[in-house]
Every structure is written in structure tokens, then in C-alpha cells.
Image 1 (tube, rainbow, N blue to C red):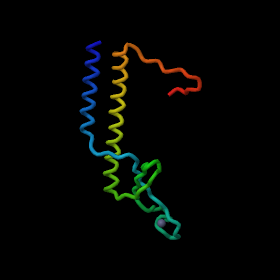
Image 2: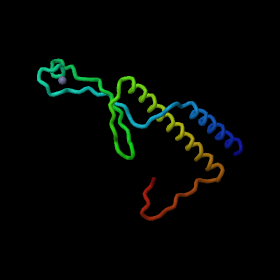
Image 3: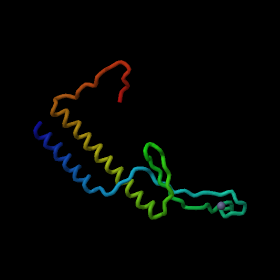
Image 4: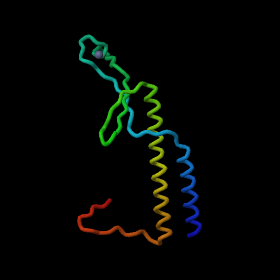
Length: 123
Ligand SMILES: [Zn+2]
């Protein structure tokens, strides 16, 4: 048990080290759009059509509301990087949680049983 626990502690430390290497982060998502206007004779109506764009948009939640912001190509590239960093952070945290659950089982000897109350839905 002591060896297994030491392994979990090592894994946890290694993951914490990975966290330290993650740069700036952002929530949300970046999309690239091409649009067509309604003007007759516009290049976007031609055959083959040449749509307008690319337009970059950042969509994120601010105080519970979805907010969309127009970005330049270079801003979009930065945000894409920061959003990837946030995803990486979540992946590392999920691994840390998983290891912690295994460690808890080892330390406590068993998985604590969830309370069974009528009306409870499984998580
Ligand atoms: Zn057009």
C-alpha cells in the first residue's frame, strides 16, 4: 500500500508540474466564418461564390450570458492558444482528480458508498 500511495503522490506531483507550465488561458471558443450578403451581383453570389470573410468570433460566457466578440486573425490565433491551454488545464485536473480518487480508496480501504435517498439521480 505504501508503495502504491507513493506512486500516486509522484503522479500527482508530476501533474502539478505540468500545471505550472500552462500559460495564459481563456474559456470560450473561436470560430471562423464566411458570409454571403444579399447584394445582387456581389462576388459572394457569383458562380463559383466568393463569400465574405474570414471573420473570427470569440464566443464565451460572461456572467452566465453567452457573449460573442469579433476578433482579428491574430487575436483569434492568440485566443485559440489560450483556449487550448484551458482545455489542457482541465485534462490535467481531471487526471489529478482520478489519481486522488484512487488514493482515497487506498487510504480509506474502500470506496465510500453514495447515500441512497429516494429521488436522488445518479451523478
Ligand atoms: Zn456579398
